[in-house]
Amino acid sequence: MKIEGTIAAVRAQVKAWKKEGLSVGFVPTMGYLHEGHASLIKAARANNDRVAVSIFVNPMQFGPTEDLASYPRDLEKDAALCESLGVDLIFHPEPEEMYHEGFSSFVDMSVLTEELCGLSRPVHFRGVCTVVSKLFNIVQPDRAYFGQKDAQQLAIIKHMVDDLNMDIEIIGCPIIREEDGLAKSSRNTYLSAEERQVALILSRSIRLGQELCQQGETSAEVIVEKMKEFIGTEPMARIDYVKAVDGLTMQQIKEVKKPMLVAIAVYIGTTRLIDNFIWD
Ligand code: PAF
Image 1 (cartoon, protein in one colour):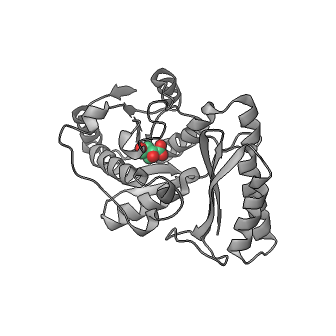
Image 2 (image 1 turned 30 degrees about the vertical axis):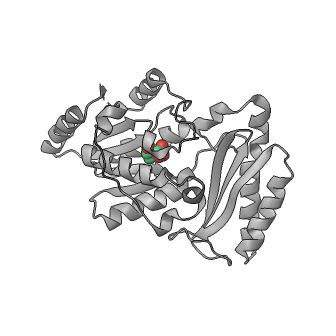
């Protein structure tokens, strides 16, 4: 497995693979890898001749008051995991390699970015679309893998690839959870032992929403209200949003429809966690 820090080295490697007619699967990450990332890498490994992983904490997708500086990093551990999963190449650039002086081109999106995390984190998806476009241009993968935990991000990337005619297949992979239900996230590491217990309110409220759908509830507003009420019973949890949106356009809906995305963002102490389910 190679670890490269420059765009030129990644380009040279991918060019050599393509010359041999090999397919390339790509998993973009911000590092501090967990089993969620591992599931993406395994999917890439199973369906491509070569697998590339990027590890880059992208400053452009963090707002000024967000956790860019404290975002957890552990390249050594990440590299060991990648190696054990059969990754061929890690791209680990410095911010200056990705954003040279005078950088001034951005990829932005309307409609799909208006609700959910796009509303709470105004610069976030511009940063995500820009860096993912750059990474796609650098790695030139045949397939790229994203987790369903960031459901809005996945929908946006699929839409971007379609809008901008990028010849890349985007594959969404299911949410990976801890045994007690908490969705795996690099940010779970911020939680104290007490907060870790409290954080279960997220997956439990997701389960409540799913049960309501299964019981035939037709009002998306009722589902959202009941989930909010339930989260409200936990004094240490502060709701950022609980919303039901159209699964494709990410626009808020009043009645249950398929596909529907029910997504939540909740602060546990100062840690903002997200979770969701898709009703399809
Ligand atoms: O999901 C993430 O980890 C990031 O948003 C991504 C896609 C790697 C872009 O920085």
